Length: 103
Image (cartoon, rainbow, N blue to C red; front, side, top):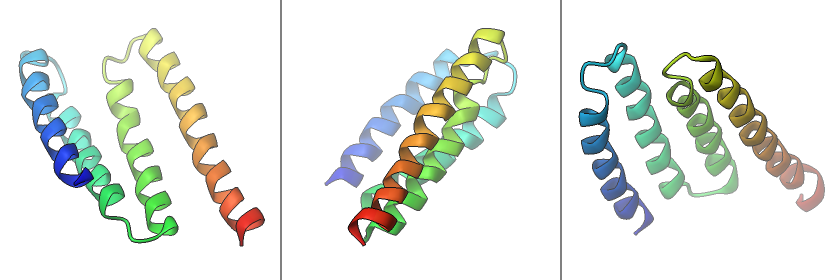
């Protein structure tokens, strides 16, 4: 169910992004990482265990970063640093909780 809903939302996002980025530099790079995000989200939806879930979550984190900093402005780069700080620390915290506290 989540995979189907996610696919529908990514389709809507793709249609919007095509129009939004028309004439923009580095469209191919953007849509390459965009495709990795879609694949990562489907991987999260279909994850069978916590380890696989965390692998796809980190893959989503790293493949979304180029989308955040796509414009290359100082503001975008600052937002990218904050994004990585939050998402990577959350992923490592979940991994630590799983390995140290629940195991």
